[in-house]
Image 1 (tube, one colour):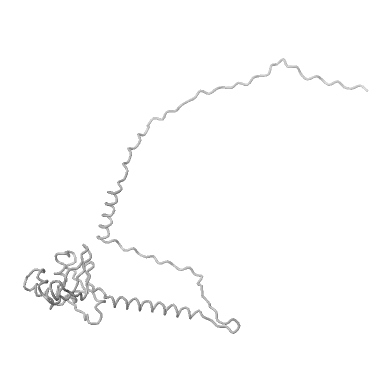
Image 2: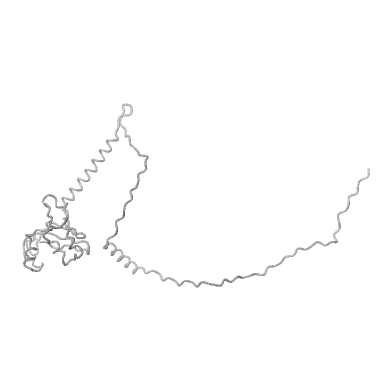
Length: 233
């Protein structure tokens, strides 16, 4: 929602958000209450004690000495998350929470109460159960000879997987990952890398003496085989 537009919060404040783009780059715990108390913010009640202190230019520490509706910074997780509580103060020690607002990346939302969370979960469960019963009843069939049976339709076509585009990481996520990697490297340091071995430029070739084998030649004095004489009948 753009600054200057004030929706009707009496219907459903859980579906409303507000932000001022001029403040987002400079948000910090020191000025987050000033950002929330902008007049264009529909979640800010101008009759609260914070507005009276702001007009009188007093410190926020004076809120404990007053009674009525006030806003207090409840939780901070820099640089992206701030939680502000609206509460009713009766005394310096007694307060009653009225609503919580969380600011994520400069956008203000109202946190749902326990009744709204339970109502949403129950409605979602009933919706899914009703859809399951309707789909199951569509597969029910009846035949006089068979009786009741289920006819499940199985599609032969393979389902196409849609290409899901990955969202780029934020600055907060990158800083947290770098911090975790730095802590891991401190706890488990890497072993030192040994120096590289020197490269030999000259290759030595070892030659082994080979033995030359000579075959022995048969002596020429060997006798020829005896001649066969013909038989006389």
